[in-house]
Structures are given as structure tokens and as C-alpha cells.
Length: 336
Image (cartoon, rainbow, N blue to C red; front, side):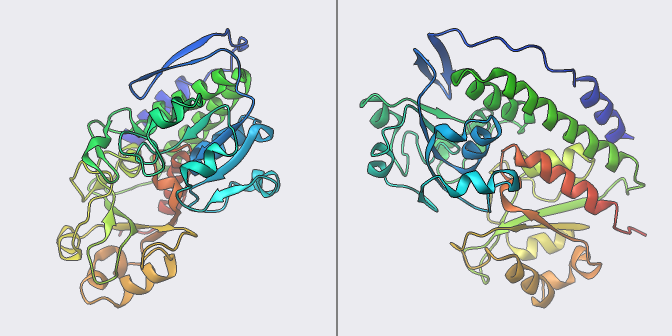
């Protein structure tokens, strides 16, 4: 099966981590189109974006994190205790002043729309002009055009290689390359395991799905996953079709259109954030079961609804765990 072949390729790419060399400074990198340089490992960092936070934690760099911001879900369980001792500057967007006040040696950013040409927090130049370097995770700029506004538009399919690139580059910046290679190897093993599990199932060849992140209002169109983002990666890896053909990261699509496509599976985001009316997973489930249109979708009628960590639906290392969540859920479904 297609999934089995993908799993074999992934497993073939997993090798024992090499003895990582120490970083040689000065270190020069091209990050999201901008040249950045480091004369030494930064003494501290502020993160704007949960993924940047969790990567630094996973690299053993929590002692260097001076502040965090932009949270969707609870921190990964392994880091709950250490996270309690680190100041959260904001649940959502921090102010430029609050970040600068921490005097970080680096600002690590998940989304370019927070720190970019029209950043909601600041531009990169605003930080660089006062001597604070910025690093944006490549998963948000490789194969992606953020000049379109909002969540941006994918110019090519998201691949986990961009996540691994971000892990390795942050590890180089902080002279933690051995930890970086260990983390990449662990994530690659998880990826291969999830694909192999799905490959062992007798899934229909034309299986289809839709990912629902949230909705500004329940009466309005929902934000669903385009075909090229992290959910698209999951579906492609498991041999499932996405009923949404858009290249936008999270296009607004009407329930009538989704119902006409009639997906076999619906994946709904579970998050702590309460910015939009449909952020709560309980609200989503109630809507799907009671709305005259949505309730007639095959996935709803057959009970094929998967709850997934909202952050796993973004282009982050959690997407690999999202792949595992979806693969495991499929093993408990009937498609007769």
C-alpha cells in the first residue's frame, strides 16, 4: 500500500544520530529571507509562539527562556513543571515593549505574521535596530507566502523537513546540536510508526476528510485546512483525500460546500484558546450533531469525528504527533 511505501522510506531515513559537532562562531544563517549572525550562543530568549517555546524546551534550553507568548493548548506534559517557572508575557500577542523589557539575546518566532514585514508584534527590523536578533521557524516561511495577509498561502506542500530544519538551526544557534539530532531522530521514528500503522489497515481507496480549526461565529463559514498545510501533510502521508482544494492555510468554506463533498472523516481542533465562538471542541461537536446541514455529513452520521490537539494542526513538531493521533483513530473506525 502507499502508506507502507512511505513508512519504509521514512524508516530508511532514520539513522542513529551522529556525534554532533560544537557550533563554530560566528554563525551566519539565512532565515526566512534575512541574513542573521551570532558571535556566540544567545544568553537568553523570548518566544513568540508555542512551537518555538516547545522546541527550545525539547532541546534542554528552558533555563535560557526568559518569557513566552502565543499559546493555543497546554505545554507538552514533559515540560509542564519547568514552564510554570517561566513568565508568560501574554496568552496571545505580546507587546513589543514587553518582549524588549526581557532583554533577550534572541526572539524566537513561530509565525511571520507576528514578527515580519507587517508584524502584529513588531517588524524584524524593529528588534534588529536595538540589537536583538530574531529567528522565525522555517515551517512558516519555506513554501509559504505570508504577504497575502492572515495565515498566508502555501506555495508548496508543507513537509516535516522544514520542522527538522528549524530544530537543527536553533540547536546550532545555541550550540546544542547533539540534542537537536536526538530530537529529530525521535520525531522521525514517530512519523514512520504512524504511517506504518495506517498502512496495515484496510482503508478505502477514496477515503476523504476535512479539518475544522474554528469559526468566528457558529452561523458563519468555518476555518478549515487547505490542502498544502500540516493537515494536508497528514492526509497525504496516510493516503486520505482532502475535500478542501484551496492553497490557503485556513480558508473559510461554507458548510453547504463541505456537505456536498461529504467527507468520511472530520478532524476537529481541541484548544484552550477562546478567541472565536467555535474554539471549544464541545461547541464544535454540538454544532455538528445539531446543524441541519452538517449533521447530514457521512462523517457525522457514522460518528467518524476525531478530536486533535489544535497545535498539531499547525506546521510544528506537534503535527507529527497529530499524524499519530489520526492514524490511531482510523484503526478504531469501520468503513463498511
